[in-house]
Image 1: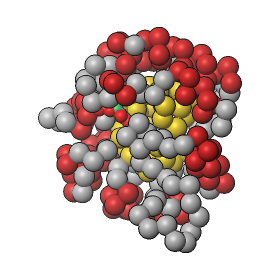
Image 2 (image 1 turned 45 degrees about the horizontal axis):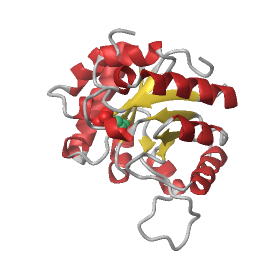
Image 3 (image 1 turned 90 degrees about the vertical axis):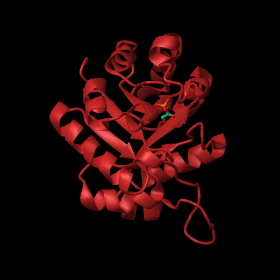
Length: 225
Ligand SMILES: O=C(CO)COP(=O)(O)O
């Protein structure tokens, strides 16, 4: 692994009530202590409205869930990179399956992140789109088959070839890109399977957000590495 030898965990808060508003802060505190106790880097990706408070009240790295390909001015309802950075983000998800973008817009946003020195994690739905976005050289490509998202059926066990071939295809194009996988990942066996297939971390949501005790669930997630 090139930039960091330890696997990472990115927790996408999406728009679950359990990870919104005050609950987003509590989840971030759980993420913070699980990261401290395990020594594994854990990044939170809360909704835009929760970023500033989490940045003020915790020390976890935070990513935005989206950046729009815009410059300051008349773009009502959009996510402007400058504001997100001021709110405390050190990176962003881009092109999540629940917030898909055109390839030209992904290109523009990856360039914006580079110009602003923040990290880019481009999400993809399969091996082919993973290779397409690898040509843009983001920091991370996170492959997540949409049909498994939110199902609890882990990509690393149900579709191991997607993880393995994404790693292979992306690295052939740009070996410095880190490949993550996600969809249905919820426990230590799922994460270990992902790492054994060559992934350098996981992107996950419901398995942790809906857990009775998210901190315990995070510690179990990384317990088999
Ligand atoms: O979309 C995902 C993370 O970005 C995966 O969601 P789940 O972990 O809920 O399947």
